[in-house]
Image (cartoon, rainbow, N blue to C red):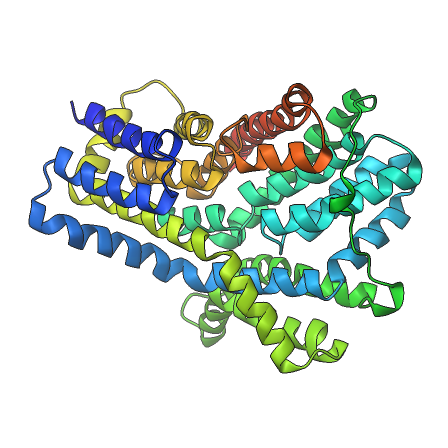
Length: 437
């Protein structure tokens, strides 16, 4: 009966988003309140539970998500993203154009949020397609596959960062494992899958052609790569140092401080403010204006994350999460597969990868302590499931269709299938890693 009530709560969330077209934040709030009543939480405790859940999750994530948005916006506005794309194109050459686009998406996608990366890089893909007289879909799909993978698998992107916080995983290890899975996934969903799309015609609209900065206005190659990849270097580096440091030493405490994801992102933004801002003749007001716009871009993401925290807290305070966890122990299904499946179903129903991942987290969280599953792999399993089969209810589906100006049939055959390949390959990668970890 308890599981049915939880499913009913999730059904309410899905209906509010899909049928009532309600904003996901409001949908989460209403679904959380409904879940509280359905699961027997005293009425005078529901509001406090909702507020506590929002506060706990946002407390862990605000610094990471906001500073990540600031860094990504500055990387874009300074021309560093364009520089990185140009260098990779020259390095790989025309023969390996799809590989160049994949690695461009991977490198630039790390600091950029998905929508920013899409709007920034897709017009560059159109420019490349026009220059070499090849299909824009053939060029664009490897780029978008890489952007999707970074969005779903790699911190500090909102969904994986939130999952790390909820499961008390290690962000550095999650990032390391994420790269191990991301690279082969991008190869399969990008260059290999793109070979089947060589003859798919697209007529990108002139509206979406990129405003290319002159080469003289771009930052140097070293500056661009160093600043864009600094969070990755710091997260992975401090994690490695932390594993080898003695627990009680003063150096280990300092490493632990620097290794905190919020501190890593703060350091990265401060350094970027100099390397891509002041050093590039931006004045402080211009840089701060860029950061202000960046925070506006991710305000709704923060609210959705907060709403997911509220639903999770309702499940926790009613004891349902623990009850479900104990019930699931008797199921003869691997917890990583279970997490992926639940997320994939919610993703197909709701459309939002972030909503799907964070909703699943509220159900699966107790498995981290009651079953033998690595929390870092659980983050990646849910991240992979959250990218399953994007279709009509996903904004990304329509962005792709309109930017590339292709039919709905071809959108499903290229975009939707690519997202499905990413989800399935991600799960396979997680299960392979689980054998060795």
